[in-house]
Length: 403
Image (cartoon, rainbow, N blue to C red):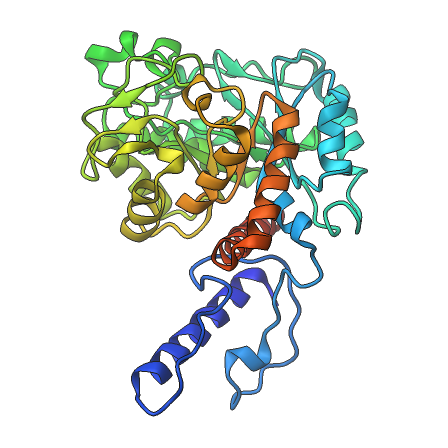
């Protein structure tokens, strides 16, 4: 049985329990340990018995994974694409981290990149990740944000330039770029940018507009360009992450380098949210959540720590039930007032599924331990961990199915 089939069965199971609880006369049931709206990992199932409930005919796809292995699926560790540190290798080998991110700026080309990736994928076994393959990510937007260059990699134009092409052309070019990533062993691209950046303020928009990372100044243009890029990547078997929800197009400072970055305008009806809404209908593998604070959505928390943004807006309102990943929670100035362990806890509690530690690999190991320890102490948090681990496994299955 596929992960998504398991989810559907779990959803029916929960509905049956709810009806039983409402019918009177039945004892109160404990809630399922897995949110039915969230995807779990790989599972097998016997032929369903039409007379049986889903509980009788489905298996927990996380069965057999230790608490640490489940926690490891919720963390992505960064590594220098051309010279990975021992701490990055140790995060996978010793601390069960299930996802890696090729960072920095490499000019070594496809073959050398594939050799680096092989060093990490060779670590996957029953002891490290319970045999679950790694998500191998990079940041290959184009323009100034292109981690991987050199022999076998195209020089990708900026999103502003890509946006001048016809949709078919952009899809075709993005397919080629995705094939280059796949040849290097990269199966997940932390792109495209969906942020809507007004033309009048683009130059002063430090994280996006100043680097020509946007596809447009309207929801329609942003969705068209980002959607074409995503379609091409997926055609090459590379998953995408739409970013940076709910939008970084209206801020003036960069969360990577500045603390206290706040958006005073974006709300649920803003153009950036509309662009994400349009693309979420296409079932992307992932959405990345920003770390800016959005006063009109949750004035007290960065978006990645906000259930109002992740659970209420992205999941409930926009209807996204796939994998949610944070923007960097290791070196970003925006989150330095919070200890690494607490960053991971708060992100998972808010509804995120993967915590990105792109710049400080040691933080990834700290985060896995923190998640596992909290899960051991708090049954509700343990349930959240299982929900997120299930979504991560489902995203991996979804990406593998397109490869």
